[in-house]
Length: 226
Image (cartoon, helix red, strand yellow):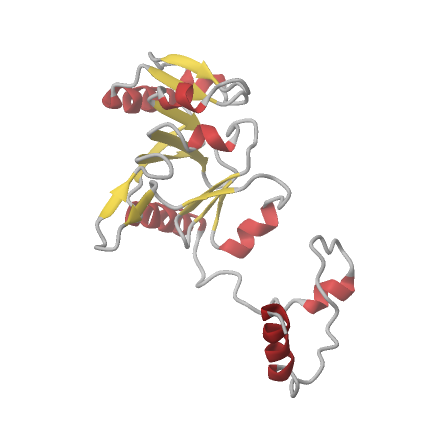
């Protein structure tokens, strides 16, 4: 008897007294089929507590800061000068921008703009000091920014290699309270990147090291229309 047969035999014996489950399986893309909608228990809370729009944005800012992101607030008119100031404080000489980034965001910036190209190598991207992007959605309860590779966000690698990431979030339009609400806005077929603070890890002694798997510094700009 092989090891595989031995393991499967143990599994069968362990499941021998388990009643059969007639629930239909959930396919990868269930679509609108009501059979599959009933197969998933969706009785969980959609958000924890009732909040106003302003309170939801405040919660996002608080949780972002808890994850050691640097949070700024701005209006549309103030954004170009704020981006210029943040890049100047870092001493950035070259800043990476995705192809669909609104040009007015960078209209006051002094550094040389480096446009994302398919032929760019990781070594070339590593020489860029900062990257500026938008986002797909921001989740208040978890302090999470989600990128989906949209025109103002670019490919995933441009937000993982540079050491400094400035992410612009439009409030309140791109802010939701909870993960279930965010999932309704996201396309699972797109390359989703979930960001909760700057990249960090800890070794066996629990010494925190930042910048291992992505930017060492994350600055989130919450931009309102007025």
